[in-house]
Amino acid sequence: MSVGRVQYGLSTALVALAQSAIANGYQVGLFTNNHTPAVTDGLSAFTEASFFGYERQTLTSWLVPSFDATSGTYTLQYGGVLFEGADSSDQEVYGYLVIGPGNLLIAANVLAGGPYPCGTPAHPIVIIASEQLGNSP
Image (cartoon, rainbow, N blue to C red):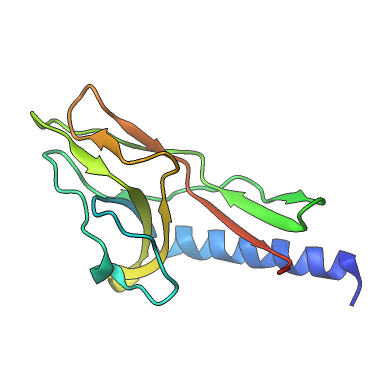
């Protein structure tokens, strides 16, 4: 199989993921427990944020996949999801979840350098959801 075909296949898979996410109303949420996501995790492994004004945000569009020739990976990125609360105190946010129909966990990622405070008007968080496919080492 040629490199061009592999690249095309990865790009096509990410575009299909983006189209499915939009068509099926995938949502982004925040989690507040100190947990490192594992492949076998379900939504029950995470404690979802509960500050006043919090609600999951629906993904509506994705940026065009980009290819990194050095690592051999394609990255698909959502433009940005804003979470801001109206609570009087913050919750510590460790990461974000991508949730599909029927509360199916699609992806979970830890926020680098976290946790971060969120919940009060002074501490909004913008999540730029990103999914990556590529060559395994």
